[in-house]
Length: 254
Image (cartoon, rainbow, N blue to C red; front, side, top):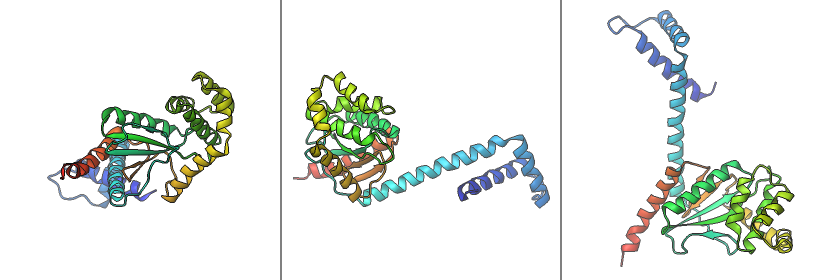
């Protein structure tokens, strides 16, 4: 049993004993406590489940907050490269760099969240896409190269969306079919996605991630603040609001 479960279980049992023992009587002895605990577990196992679940949620919130504070205090320097697709105003106060794997279901959720953030912050946020295909996903690297080939024809974001809609079946035939669906020049698309130049662009993104010890997807670098995982929209908005508040005094200064 993990320390987390032991702690939560102990809290639950403590609450159970306190609730079951008559307030007017002396504190129960060891044997009496054992009988109360057994009875509470037998009659209301949901109490233990609810207590452990709540404790785990609160612990996750604290851990996320600690990680976020650490990220704010240890920001990294990461910029868009010329080959990286970008969406949003060039002079945006906040830049979100996403490291993404097209076969990762969490990346699909993260992409939806990023799009919502652009909608909510149209003048202050821009999005930069970087490829981080994981070795455990056999179709992620070909998909990454295909996406940059679509970028050469001005259709990156449309192709990006189709890839995530088909993330569970990204065969070579599917990559070609999606390009045809967007009306891409088939010969150019095929040539570009197999080119050494695009292979080098994908590898450059991977090396940039490795330089910053970013090994999971999705990972977001928001003005240097690292946020990992497909977290809920409000969590990202809190980071953006905090960064905008930081930038406001600088913008107002003469």
